[in-house]
Image 1 (tube, one colour):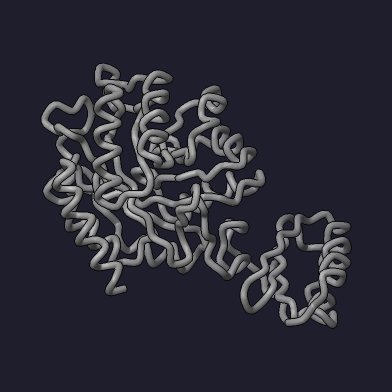
Image 2: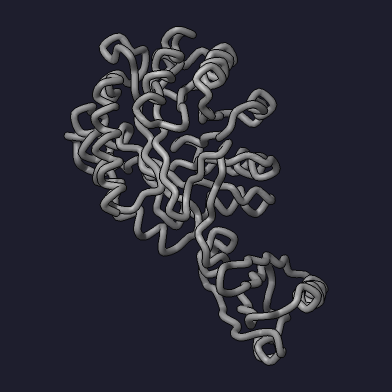
Length: 332
């Protein structure tokens, strides 16, 4: 249930109404937009008389929300959420390029890539320290050592960093990470999501390989229900019967999610396609679809990459891709 308040309502009136609603054993989330203030009621609202609520002097309208995701719902929060990552904003018309290698391999490699992607327009550095791989015999990442190399490269290049977490026990290691990524395989690791909801740090949540958009939003809800409202959604392709690409990039997810939620939505064309030659076109398509950012894998020598070299761009290829992406942004 949501209550849309009338313009000009005082803070005292809002607090009095909130206190009354809390006495009914529901959680109250207040969203102050440019043009209206919305109170979202989460919990058992059956004991609240919607007619009585709508009849109050300060309430303009009351609407019932059937969607199971509440905090992530645009009805609860009409204005776009804007997430600020050390001065680089994502969402609400703000766009960011995120780039870096699939996995951190050496200090020299990650620093070389960091400096090159920054020179081409990327404002956030990505890199994997802990790598979930389909085969137990594939490179699993350098772990805590890789995380150290990534943070050092980010500091040297003056770039905030995003990297993937796989285990609740690793959360303390991520204190200096700017954005924590939850990978596709952990999208429904609900215990991990709940713990990430208790920290004050942006969470980049990737859509699972075979998950619906509703399930993605419910996973975001797990994080937000614990208090952390800074969630970035990522479309990274889903598994279909098509075999020419690694996954199928669902670009329709971008406008659909923007309609359903106030959270920023970014696109990862690297994992979606699995082929470097497709990344540029899909990055441009994702941008044209209205994504709030594009995340691309870049390696200084893809042929020798320890992980996902086939889908990684060279620094020069990324430079050209970034230029085309930003031209599309100018048109938009």
